[in-house]
Image: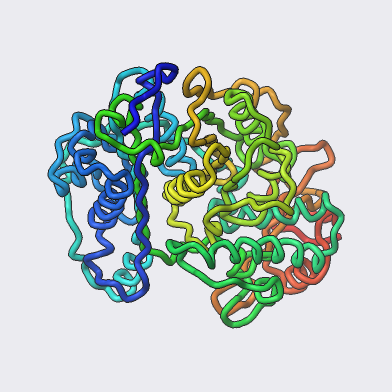
Length: 497
C-alpha cells in the first residue's frame, strides 16, 4: 500500500470514500428514515474506500441541513446510530451550496490539523415525507430530544428575499428562476418557441446522462420535444418551464463523502487509486435579486468560479469534467456563461436535479460523489463542481483531481470583488409607467394560468415587481414576448400599455 510520497504534505486533504442511496418508489418507510439513509450512504462510502477501520477513525460528522426533519444535532444522532464517537458534529445552514462549502471547510480543517477524518453527509426523504403528510400518517423515524444541544453550525444564514419581492409573495425558486429564463431569452434575442426548444435540448442532453446514472431518480432519456411539449403529465409549472424543466424533489436519497489527511489515509491502508484530492475551493454570495444590475448575470459565479480556477493554477479549458448546478435551465446557462463554458459540451456528471434528483440542499453531495468516480476512471483529469443555494444567491466551487494540488489545498471567499459590482436600487412601492424586464406565468396543478409575475424597470432605472391575474395578460405573456413591453403599475398590479 502506497504511503504519502516525500513531496506530499501529510496534512493534504483527500477524499477516500463516497456513497449514494436512491430509494425506488415503494421502498419501506423505515428505509427513508434520514438516519437510515445517511447511515447506509456512510457504510457504502466506507466500503468504497476499502478500509473497515475508517469509520472508527472519524473525528467529525458534518450534516447538510435536512428540510424534511429538523433534529437539533443530526450528526450526533447518526454517530450514535452507527456506534462511533466523533469529537465534533456540525450542521450546515439551508442552501444547495452547503455540501461543497462543507467540503471546503473540512479540507481547511484537515490541512490545519483540526481534524483527521471527516464525514460530510446528507439526505432528503421528501417523497416519503410528503406522502405521509397527505395521508396523515405518522412516520416511525428516529427522533431526538428537542432539548439536545444544537450542533455547531458551519456558515451563516443568508436573507435571500428583498421587501420588494416579499410584498408580492415572491420567494420560491420556482417563481424566480423562470424570470431569469425570460431575461436570458430577451438578451439572446430568441423567439419564445425557439428559446423553449433551446432549453429543452439542453435538458434532453442532461436526461441522457441520468439514464446511465445508477443513482438517478429518473433513468430515462427524454427528447427535446417531450420536454418542451405541455401535456397532462408535463404541465406548465412557471412559464417557460414545464415539469421536466424544474428540479425533482420527489425523491428519497442520501449521500456521504469521507475525507482524510493523506497521512491518515495511508495509515488506514486506503489504496492510492481511491484517493481524489480537493485542489481548491471558493465561496461567494450574490446581491438580492431586486438589487442585481442584470437578471441574466451572476457576478458571484463569475468571481468565485474563476478565482477557484486561479487558486488551482488551471484554466477552464483544463477542466475535463464539469457538474454545473442545475436546479433550472437558467442556472446552468448563467453559470456556463460566467465561467466561459459552451452549452455544447457536457455540463453534468449526474444528469442534473430534474433527472438525477434534486433533494433540496443535498444534491451536490451526490454530484461530488459521482465526480469522484468519474475522476478515478480518468486519472489525472480535473473536475469542477459548482453549487448554488437560494435564488442564485449562495455559491460554492470545488476543483478535484486524482493528482494532489501543488502547494496544497487553497481556499478563498473573494466577496469584496463581488460586492464591488454595480447594483440597482429597488422600489418596494411604485405607481406609474414601467418597462417589463422579465417575467413568468405561474400555473396551477390543473395546468391553468394563475398569476403573472414581472420584474419591471422604472424610467429612472430602479427595479420593482408587479403581478397580474388578467387572463389576457397571462395569455399574451405565454404566446408572445413580454420582455420590453410598456406597462403601468397600480397597487402592485400591472396592465400592459
